[in-house]
Amino acid sequence: MIAKKNIYRVFKVLLLLSIPASIWFFSNKKSSSIKKNKCFSTAKVTKLHRGFKGNYSFQIEFKDENRKLIIDRITLFFGPDTSIVNKYFLVVYNCNNSYEYELLITKKDYDGYGLPYPDSLKWVNQYFE
Image (cartoon, rainbow, N blue to C red; front, side, top):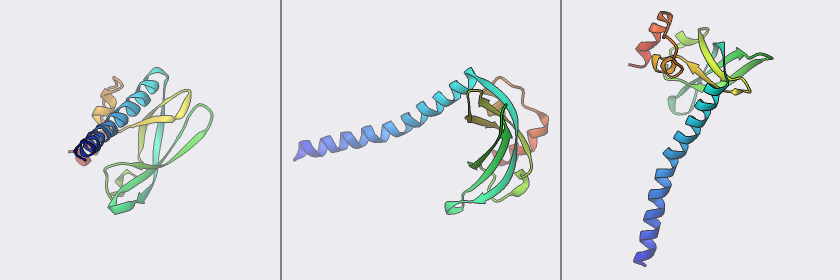
């Protein structure tokens, strides 16, 4: 009976450790595939959505080389503030798969791609402090 409880505890610990490791692995894989085949475009935030438990998300649209993409439900930390709607941001995407993308908003986002952070985005910092 005690051995069964220990096995169950070990299983729970391994499961709990595997979740963040999986998230890190897949986000790192996506980021590296974007960096290998990066293309740039300008994304416009078009709509604000109120989500579950007071979360907010946005819809963005940008054009890749062939088509206009509309991506729904991008979760950001702006809350109900609509000042981000109709604003433009740089988006970097995988040239081979436009649905692998990253919206560049913060200085950290720009640093991740070795790009200088534009002065025109300093108004965004108030939402991330």
